[in-house]
Length: 93
Image 1 (cartoon, helix red, strand yellow):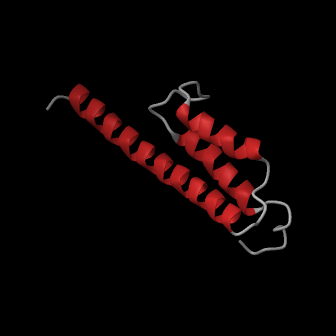
Image 2 (cartoon, helix red, strand yellow; image 1 turned 90 degrees about the vertical axis):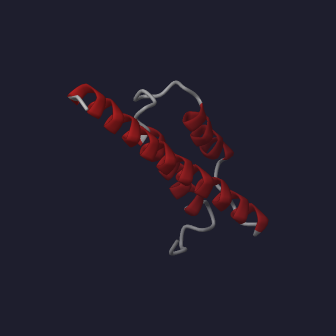
């Protein structure tokens, strides 16, 4: 195996791992929002949730899409904002 093939294979494997991580965070975000809504708790601004989902789905990013680190960051910020929604600021989660 030559160096170029090895680098391309490693890059593709890294992209798959990062995409899987971003997908896991997206699923966690959706489940958290759904759980909060079912419990009758505030979920924060709707635009934060939908903006994070759109940022993950749309191809326009700050960093081109084989690198999902920016997508993961946006999804984690949205997840954090759901957990700190108004009325839950004193909560430990």
